[in-house]
Amino acid sequence: MLRIIAFLLGVYLLSIGVLFTIVYLNLLTMGYSIKEYILFIITRYEVLTSLIGILLITLAMKKGIKRKRK
Image 1 (cartoon, rainbow, N blue to C red):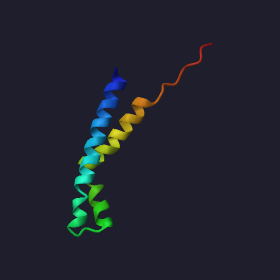
Image 2 (cartoon, rainbow, N blue to C red):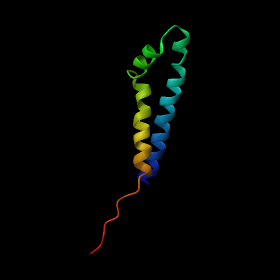
Image 3 (cartoon, rainbow, N blue to C red):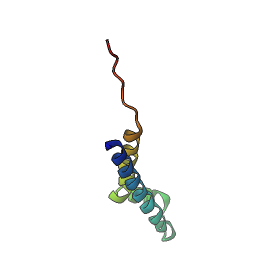
Image 4 (tube, one colour):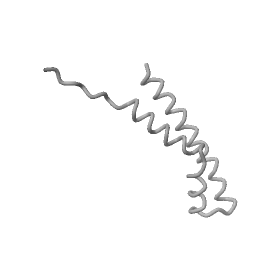
């Protein structure tokens, strides 16, 4: 159950991050260069939630380590 919640939360956070990344693409039309855009993006916490989302998704999908029985 915890894996499902972590997966859904990860998808939610990833979608928020990608949404704001697309929204902030409008800065390029306002005269920002690619370098300025990337520097702006990495300082925004809304976009950094996508990294947390990716981490949660990979942890939820990762299989557990099976212990060997003696």
